[in-house]
Image 1 (cartoon, rainbow, N blue to C red):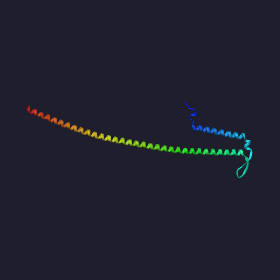
Image 2: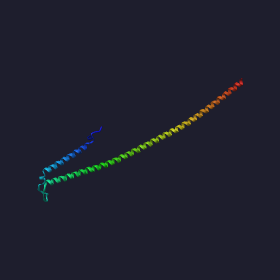
Image 3: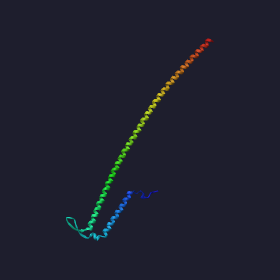
Image 4: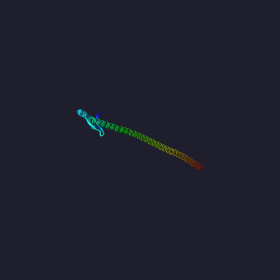
Length: 172
């Protein structure tokens, strides 16, 4: 089930939307005020600049200064937003580079651990093979000793039986 679009909008986006609407409403109010009082805005008066005087409509001068001030404000806001975006991108690139370094280091550690485990397994296999060879040699020696004892016992029994046969043959 799809979520409504409003659930995807962040709080900051809602605030920015509210600010934009408020700014548009204020600009519309100023424009409406200027339109309703256009005759007063365009009536000429003597304006003193301190070192000289000039004859101009005060309302238009103030409206022009307000517009200029608004342009400067918007330019500054654009500058701040742009520098913030550039800084954010720099930080994202730095974070990505750090993430890649961490991934490489982790991969290197995993490879090193794998090699260490393989070396340990190889040592264990070599020790097992050495013990197996030693045990096989020991069993072979025991079998030879056992066979030799059996042969000696068989020879001893044969000699004893031959001697008994000789005694029986002499007595008999």
